[in-house]
Length: 375
Image (cartoon, rainbow, N blue to C red; front, top):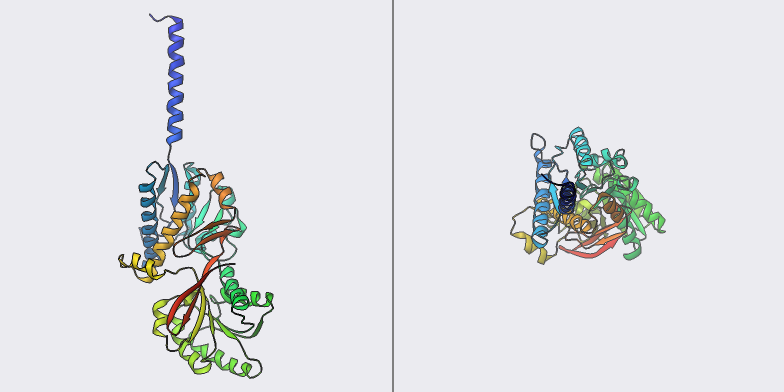
């Protein structure tokens, strides 16, 4: 029969052992980054599924490389398929928020999904980082939302400031698609005016058939005031095929300033005889040496772009988590100004939005990156 003192010692040792076991497990516990991607496992658009698929490839490659270099990492990834369904996405975020091991979410991809988070992010208190959302007034209004891709205002404003300050274009015409194109052209106009430039005239088109009407309208304006350049904000790269022959017909020597959708190398090369001088901002560019690195993957330009958005974003988030392995620490860290050298584009977070873009030139059929530009 055990004496009282021996029993007391055994109980004491039991609780010490239990404490060590619990403490050891808490130290080695894995923290997770939740993914919120449109993988469309049940149904949905093939195009959206492709976006999710290639972003996931980039995320996975980034994580595997990180884990190989950091075998003791306490970070895991948890896969989530939004199905591009607001209700599915909403419930997924609730589930992630209740799982205390999830310290951040990489996703969503689309601005509409990110918009759903505006009203609930502060309640969830979970850092939500979108690699690609570009709509205005998303991350700027919540301390838990982050956009690693510049929004429309930063894009239009960057091109305007660069045109006026660096290229010395003071008098500018604006041709813009009337819906999507306005997201870029309106901040462009505002920034030109703010920097003492002049918008000589504007024309908005509802469909590509009306583009030539804008060129004809501008022809009368040019008789009274000579422009330094024309800013053209398009709906998609397909508009370039309509615009380029009109440029050579009406304004062969006028430099063109473009919105982000001009960033399509294949389309530009097809129209190189009609485009003499073009400048535009973009979030994706690989120099020749990097292009050679990724050429072996046999991705199309859009597939490679999505792959690198996933890869770059995951790299950034993994490095951000290294010394910030809790929601609160990570959220505080990401709310600082951060300068991260990315692959296809740098990440310079200010007020939770990336302010960095590349300024490109297309001159005599040659595409070249001029500079990294921070707005």
